[in-house]
Length: 194
Image (cartoon, rainbow, N blue to C red; front, side, top):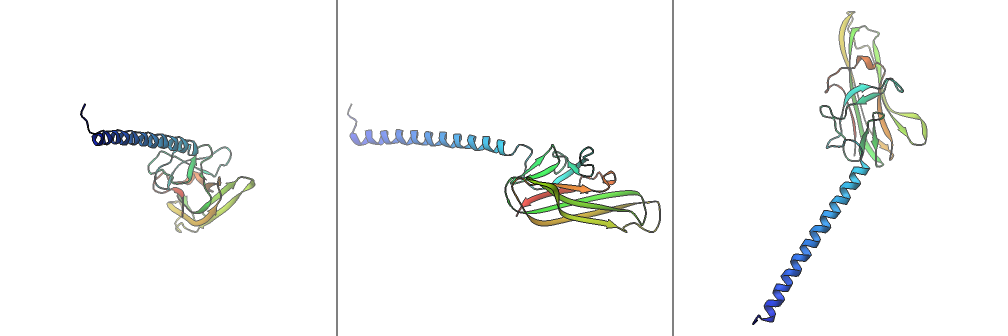
């Protein structure tokens, strides 16, 4: 047909280049599908971009002072190696390391008196360790005015950097859960790897 051997070689190389690019694309798509499948298995609950949880409700049956968090309300997020566990209201650590843990609660006392008080604590449950381990605790008292029978708002903020182990579950307790404010910005809880 009068085609030079050099031109035939160039056309052949172009075909090989196209097939190599298609093969590489197929490999990349397969790799992404495998990673996505693994991520879905590793992180069963809601996981987004920042480490904050908004308060939702109070656990009333097994642990009456342990707060439950609404994973889809307002700015309810977790990140990295942390998973929210709907069944018990805890944040589960999926990789050991140093974590910054924080929690804030806001309580409204409708009839506040000088003797009004509450406790706010952050604790964890660890596999193989039966009693919960207290990580942080605050006791607030004496925050009401001398005028009896007035409404009063009090808050507590706890924060610390602590070493956590894989599968540790972190929770928040408050001694007077019925006094919690319903503000999405008044109550939050979160942790992230440092």
